[in-house]
Structure formats: C-alpha cells, structure tokens
Image (tube, rainbow, N blue to C red):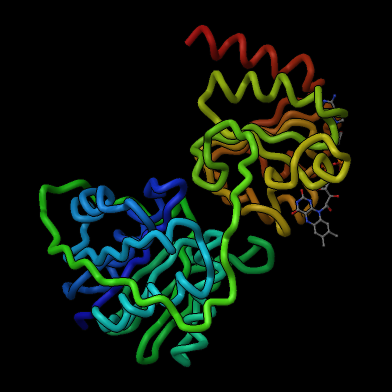
Length: 321
Ligand code: FAD
C-alpha cells in the first residue's frame, strides 16, 4: 500500500545527524513505493537539502527562521505541524534523540495518533507496518503493528541501514515559519560544555569507563585510547555518581542508549541498568579484573586484567596500525 512518509531531520550544531539519513531508509521501506519527504528545521540550514535529497527524499521542506536557531519545544512543534499540514503524511519519523523524544509524543497526542518509540527495524507484512523495538531494558524485542490515520515513530541511531547515495534531486519547498501565538519558552543563552567532539549516541566506537577507573584522572587512559580509535568516551552511572565524569556521558537505562560497532567497557561490572544502554552494540569488549563480573556474559571478547595496564597497551598497539 503506497504511503506518504515524512522524516523530521535531526540536527546537531546545524549538521545533519546520520540517524536522519537512516530514517530516510526506513521511510522508503514504509512508503512502499509512495512518497518520502524530509523537513529541515533551524536557521541557516539550506545546505542540508542536498544530502537529504541524495538519500531518498522526494521532497524536502525547509523551515528556516532565526527563531528556530535553538530548539524550543513549542516553536519546533509548530514548525513540524506546518510540514505535516503541507505533506499530509501517514507516517512521521523522528530520531530517538532528545528532540525527537520531546516532540514526537507531543505531536502524536495533538493529532490523536499512535506513537512507537525507539525503533531498531521496520518492515512491511502485506499492508501492515511492523516496527521492532527493544523492551525490558533490551532483554527482548517487540514487533509492534501500527495503524491509524497517522503514525508517529522515533528511530534509534545506528540501526536502520543508511540508503545508498544517488544523484536524485528532491523538489524543495520553503515554508514560511508561522510562530505560535503563545510561545512559552525562549532560549536566552547557550552554554556549551567542552566535549571530545564525537557524538556519543552516533559514535561507531565507544570507550566507556566505570567505577573501576577510580577517579577523574583515571579516565585519562580511556581518552587516549578513544583518540587513537576516533571513539567517543562514555561512562557507567557508577562513574558519574562518583563524580569522575559528567552525567552527559552516562550510558544505560537512565542515560543514553547506544549501538556502536565496538563498545569497550573498562572497569564496568555490567549491571542490568547499564546493559540496557549498550547490550545491542555490535561487538562488546570488556576489561575487568574480576573474572566473575557480569559484563563478561554479554561481552564478545573479555580481558581479565587491570584496566590501567590493559588500556594503555591497547592504545600503544592501536597506534601501530
Ligand atoms: P561497579 O558495579 O562498582 O563496578 C566496578 C567494576 O570495576 C567492578 O566489576 C570491578 O571488578 C571493576 N574494577 C575495579 N578496579 C578495576 C581495575 N583497576 N581494572 C579493571 N576493572 C576494575 N547504571 C548505569 O551504568 N547506567 C544507568 O543508566 C543506570 N540507571 C540506573 C537506574 C536505576 C533506577 C538504578 C537503581 C540504577 C541504575 N544504574 C545505572 C546503576 C547500576 O545499578 C550500577 O550501580 C552501576 O551501573 C554500577 O557502575 P559500575 O559498573 O561502574 O560500578
């Protein structure tokens, strides 16, 4: 059954996050030969039309306005609603990011529509759309059949295959942003934290530290390994609670959910709440001095040893490659 599917592009510092292109792949499957559109919302974002166009969007809506330079829920919701009105889709896909998790359910409620969250796979079964999502902290997977006049869904990064790049050109439609009358929030200032520059939720490799690193300084060898591998640095809540690192690095049930190609857990015991955020990583390497640590049950490769010996040795070997 041909459908119209709208992808809401997810941006970070005015750059397109890969999950937006992955969502276009999912959109093409769900559209079943119908039409796929993407909407870019922000300020100074017109250069993002091209990659969306080259990765399967038949139409690209651009809503570019100074008031949209920073994420403000009411403003963003109004902008997405304008794109929905213009395209009239049966499915609206967001990234399962801070913005997608905020806006998608609000819009689903507004449209009296269903919402499926944290999708890792989409498929068609006849005329039905099936969405796969992890449940019970990643211990099982549910296949959800979604129907209704419009379905809202959020896509977990690093799971849907990115469509091949083509030379197709989408038709581009500029929409004049109509600010809502009762805008309740305004961003006055943005204070940026220093970061390694690699986006944790989209990173292909993550080096992660737990309470075993013992101090903020104990993260240094992990940062060195991450630099050699081009990886992001994450942490367990144990490490965050102990004050060794910032909570923005926390991975797990109450932190970020990640699916990198390689996850290197250093001095992390493997509590169920941590596994909820990383157990779907493609390859897991665990470094722990306790051979009984539960992390070894989910690890593809386990190194029993002191992380302060093993991590520098890995960095030095990786530098030789
Ligand atoms: P520990 O359990 O103390 O493990 C430290 C490990 O380091 C041990 O296995 C030890 O053998 C090893 N070690 C020590 N020294 C060395 C060394 N020199 N070399 C190698 N190994 C060494 N946790 C999360 O991570 N993310 C979450 O999102 C999260 N959400 C939670 C939500 C709720 C509601 C609750 C109740 C808990 C949550 N937790 C979460 C906490 C979770 O239960 C664990 O307490 C936490 O993950 C433990 O962190 P850890 O593995 O770093 O520390």
